[in-house]
Image (cartoon, rainbow, N blue to C red; front, side):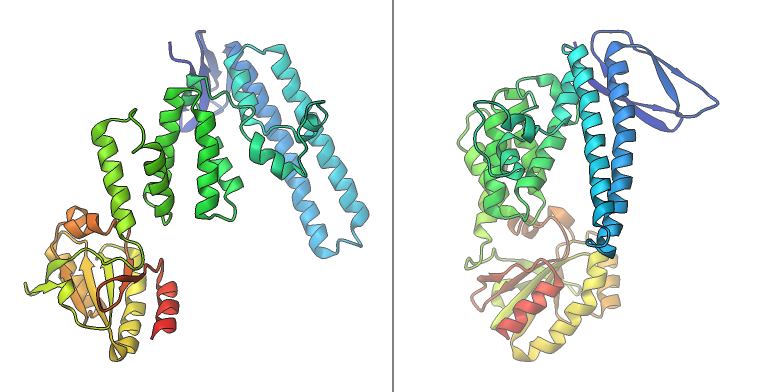
Length: 392
């Protein structure tokens, strides 16, 4: 039996309801589009009481916070008494919200709605520190680093029928990996997966969510870390799927600074074959782009300036278009007045270089030395210019 949340769209308005082995009766007034009332369903009465009342409290907290921020910017010393008063109001509202939630949970502890409400809450640092066996944490931030998921039941597969697991994973990654780094992401991922291991279904979901999160991103090393530690060493994954993930991870590892890039043999708009490895310039900038890419549209004038400035100093540009229609490629070539090496096999994202260079967005840059080894993979034209300034 399915237990979880359904999203219903009614006359242009969407809302969520809980389905858990009971009849759900909703009344909606045609005169008031989007307004509805739960007539029958203990789960949904509880859930919507929680949502409606906490929304009002949170709105009040946001308004008071906004007012406090203005007063603080004006003059924190002069407005000290007012700020203390506002802080007291926020504290009272937070306490009111907590009492509301506690009462809802205590009256209906066995409902699925109660588990959702509890899971959505952050663990209470003050309440924890009052326990006799409480560990000593210097502050709330360090407490949450280890207790962030205390209210989430990772053993309950029905949580996958809500947005709780997905939201909590994202929140924890943002909270712990802030500012983001490869190391902080790795630690956060390990922490999450240890807790998710209580349930195979949830564990698989979390693994897939993390892979999707880092699959198309600038954090290639994090993606490879997940694959190598949790996929390649596991026997729980479909062989074909695991093989594809491991293959991508291996490609990522070959595209590190100091490594030689894969060969590209392609043709220009006139059908002339060009081989990347045959370029004899001291430096080569490989640019993956496309006529339909709005970011390329903005970047091309900058690239043109870069070529004009650094061509005399030994820079060559090898462009590879991800277009599949030749005329679009030719039109864009003329529009941008491209004078550097400009090639394509007109296979779009199915081309061999796209896979070999792990291309998932355009424009993408690889700056190479005379031996076609990677010097840098600038994430933007601005970074590219800074790198070139340091080299040339």
